[in-house]
Image (cartoon, rainbow, N blue to C red; front, side, top):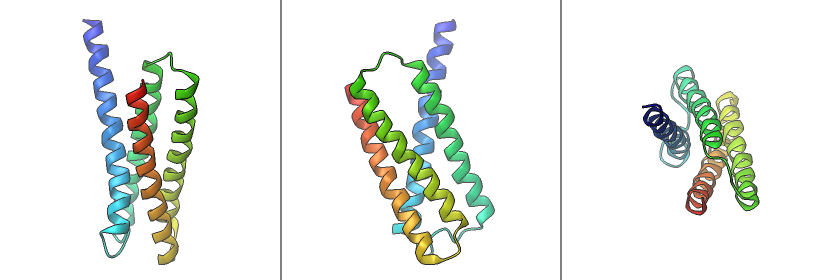
Length: 130
C-alpha cells in the first residue's frame, strides 16, 4: 500500500513539474512571440500564475531530485546548467513583470522564453540518459 502511494506521489510531482514548466515557458513564448502586447494582462492575475508556476517547479523539482538518487557526475554537470538556466527564466519573468518600459519587457520575456526552451531540451536529454 505504501509503495503504491509513493509511486502515485512520484507521478503527481512529475505531472506538476511538467505542467508548471509548460505553463511558464509557454506563457513567456506566447507573450513575446504571439501576443501583440506582451504581459498586457492585469498584472495581479499574471503575477499569480507566474509565481505559482515558479513555486510549483521548485517544490516538485526538489522532490523529484530527492526521489531519484544515484546520478553520475556527467548528469550533475548538465543538471547544474539546467538549474542556472531555470534561475535565469525565473528572474527574467519576475523582472519582466516589474519593468515599465516596453522594449525592456519584451527583451526579458524573449530571454525567458528562449532559456526556458533550452531548459526543456536539457531536461529531455537528462531524462534519456538517466
